[in-house]
Length: 604
Figure 1 (spheres, rainbow, N blue to C red):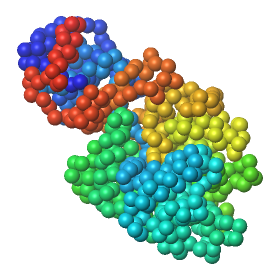
Figure 2: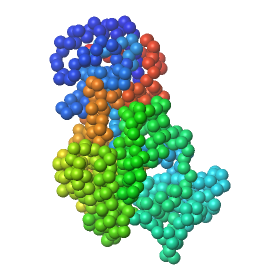
Figure 3: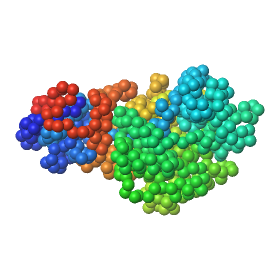
Figure 4: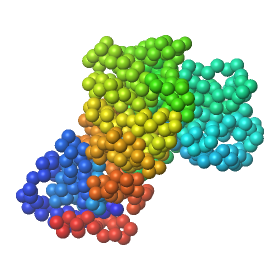
């Protein structure tokens, strides 16, 4: 809980502080640099992982005006406690920089949660159909029904319009799978979209068909856009509500920064309004969706917002563009691989083009256009063939303009080869991997990928050995964002199913934590002001209820978040879920509790 020192106790602490100066040096920045004014907040009695280059630790962190002003021991920092200072007892647990989820679709995460979307993550098709039937019964006639979450990893087969039509009638229905790379529509929705026997699928996309050539309703990759163009858009108010609600859920998990990749200019405008109004509490870096051709890339670059001073760029910033290079290595088999899947197919690029050579050439042109415009590029590349093509395009763009530090990176990089990673390390091309998804799926794709690729999937250790800057993103709503699951998987390579999957790709706790802190800060061009606990850095802080260094990694998923501080404000507190950073008056006590921090400080 947060407590405050009385004026008398603060004076007593200040008297003792001079004697504390004689205590052995910690090697940490001197608390005296914080000045004489009291801190707004002191987090104490913990193990603070500073995440600096020396991997130092401390016991307490002091915050003022949204920034860290000092780190050190409880004794060293207690002179910064004034009569209105909030005090947060970490209870011996880990204090660390706020989690930076480097690939999380924040707006989509909010919009795909009830009540705006029904949950269709079921183990059987009858269960899925029942949920849709219940939604249809409660929805006005003719209104759209949206759902998300079905998974080919759980269901015996994907749902089709034949499953949905008997319970939906004239309600148009669209149900998106958990990867966001496929959806299923009922007949009413297909009719509105004009998808028929004669409809051609976009490059790299699939319109599944019955034996008579009729669409089954299952649309993969870019074929989804044929349907989405007729699905009514959410209102700006619904989007804003979804973003703020999602941010609150993520704060409760220690997350203070995200990258929302592949958004539209319209959605960027909603974010900017939230930031300008002070309603955006989640630091958000965004990439605009660049489409699938050089022309759509040019259109996107023309839509990139220019700095106009309307919002704090530390709360919201459009950094560049996202390119979709290929699909996913699931049953869809749409990730482009050098070696075939178990069914003999290899997948392909999802870039426009009549053949593979033209697609690769257009990918090259798109990346070059963004690089020339000074935009950062994040490219979705799951298959090893796609990663190779993307890295080659990045290197060619850098050679053309070698002094432009855009910090392009590979998104996902599921099967990035050792050779590709070596190139990336030498040329500072970063990568964002997905340990949380690996934790979720375990070895379930082995029949499709084979044993070696299943073990290699997301090669964290190989990437670190090549000195690649590795970030980790949840890809929510693809999976429920829980970075503690990601930590477990990176360190043990054991998933939720309890099965090992590539133990030679294990990394250390400190390396894993950097993928959620310092690496994504670099990716965001923000390493000078976030990602570490040092004086002058943003006060984005995650306080756990356990000490990660004394807890077995397999038990990390059971840990909780004691408190989350964003820009110096307490946005989540376990003991008081609605707590804010409003400063209590001197002598205030929460829930009748005494000032136990003051007692602890004076007991030193």
